Image 1 (cartoon, rainbow, N blue to C red):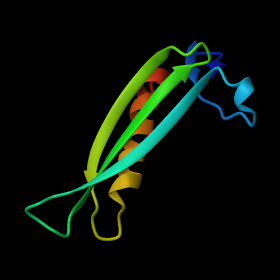
Image 2: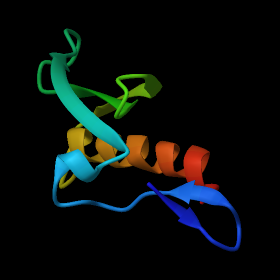
Image 3: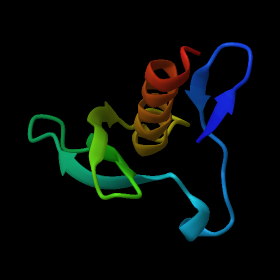
Image 4: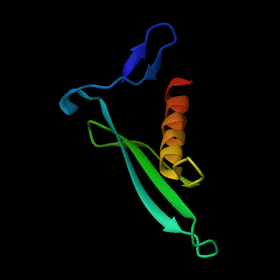
Length: 91
């Protein structure tokens, strides 16, 4: 994380070495089939943000279904990241 000088809010930046990170963002996926519609696949995507100290400071999950030309897993993952960014950075 880095400080945004003018606004004093925390925003994210990637680091190449995990040892240099102030926090770790992890995301995982699982799928479930809707029994009523055999061809529908729901993605359950969960994410956490954990400080270097091991303290969990954010956790959330999203569920999204696949659609033509759209992955439900990718959409749910993007929504999670945007939720975290909005909460942490106000963007």
